[in-house]
Amino acid sequence: MRFGSSSFQHGIAVFEGIRCYATSGESSIFRLEDHARRLLDSARLLGIEHGYGLDDLCVKISTAAAAAGLQNCYLRPMLATGDPYLTVDLNALHFTLTIEVWPIPLSIPDSPGAGMEPSSYQPAGWRLALSEWRRPSPASFPSRAKATGIYVTSALAKTAATRAQYADAIQLDPLSGRVAEATSANIFVVRDGKIVTPWLADALLAGITRDSVLVLARELGVPAREGPVEVADLLAADEVFLTGTACELVTVSSVDDTHFVPDGPVFGMLAHAFGEAVTGERFGHLGWLTPVNSSVEPQVRQQPIGL
Ligand code: PMP
Image 1 (tube, rainbow, N blue to C red):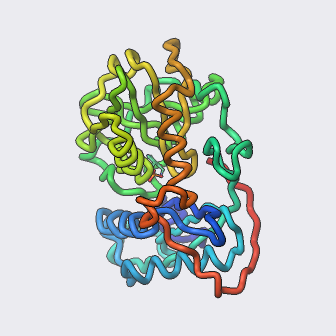
Image 2: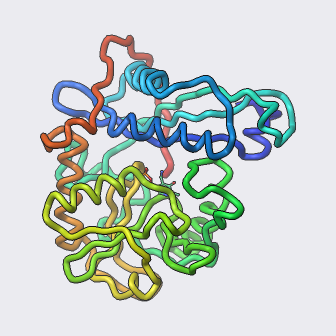
């Protein structure tokens, strides 16, 4: 990205994080159309003008995955401007698509890549801190948009947490003080066999993994709903876990000084079902997978990934 652009100087760009998984005989992109839709929604919420349609985005992302020649990878399409103007008037700027492809190990139990975990994976569960940094108010930022600039608040919360030896932080809704999400993941709370995840009335990203887990839970007969989650609900949980494209499903062992059963039965069941869904072994959800076009000549470009 050009240093003298508004995307670089002001953090004005929208992006997606998408996974491509090795499935039987080919690679498939998980919920490609939903990610592409969210990218378009993010652009719309910020008033970013561009010339891409849904089909166009899906084809370009799929082609980038094929060209990378990696079976398991993380795709990062971004709509950014390279225009050499230091303005925050988005009407004046032209936004174009770039797609980075990163190799990434898997972190799903029982999946083909089990044992190759992301760098911050902790087998005994992540220790989380409740952050003093709340999510930005919807009056200041559309929380439904996945935009680069909003990650400053994630960085503040995550950095403070890791300095204190926690794996990640939980951020609260700025107005209600309820639990919103972790710095790059959604949160789920299990109590008495029932699952609840913070509703979208609070300031959080509508995660696609979150949605997948809600669908899978209901399918498995586990009551699951979106609703208000007070800090007290979180601390009274039997199990807590996080969901996100990069971290997938991660079990949580504690929040500050409150401990939970890591790798609990509900988490285990959902992590297993999710692992099946992303690798094409859950036949009811083959529609979540888009096979990568293997006719594209691979051009391998390896980069490390940080979550
Ligand atoms: N919240 C935030 C702030 C995130 O950055 C992410 C990662 N995209 C998520 C939640 C999880 O969203 P998804 O499951 O779509 O990756």
